[in-house]
Length: 129
Image (cartoon, rainbow, N blue to C red; front, side):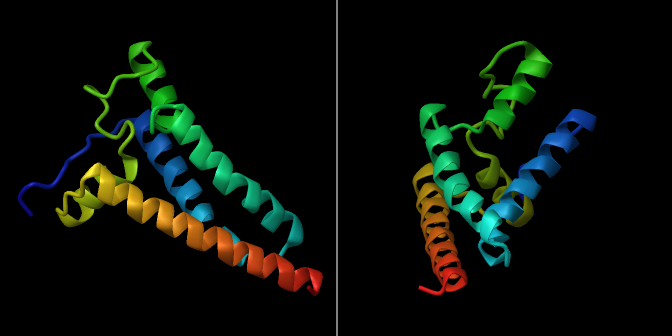
């Protein structure tokens, strides 16, 4: 498709990409884990993730660490198109659909609110309430 974003990756890039995927997998499926301790951790992890984005100018610390390792700069959005836009660039690369920041944020925060509510429901079922 035309308009797709092509990101070239080296070993560090692949490591950061797959770590992001693993975290995204936990965010999307963590509420299903049948373990009380994991659910309690998850219920703290989701708000902590959002808080860390907000305190870090809507960027993920993983992208900042990658920029630091590559360029010795905490912020390098001109060199790292995924900084502050990891999911948006992933969607564009896979589908060719270019979402704006606002639409991406609405999608992400709505999904995380849903997952958080589902985790609470799952936890309360474990406790018999």
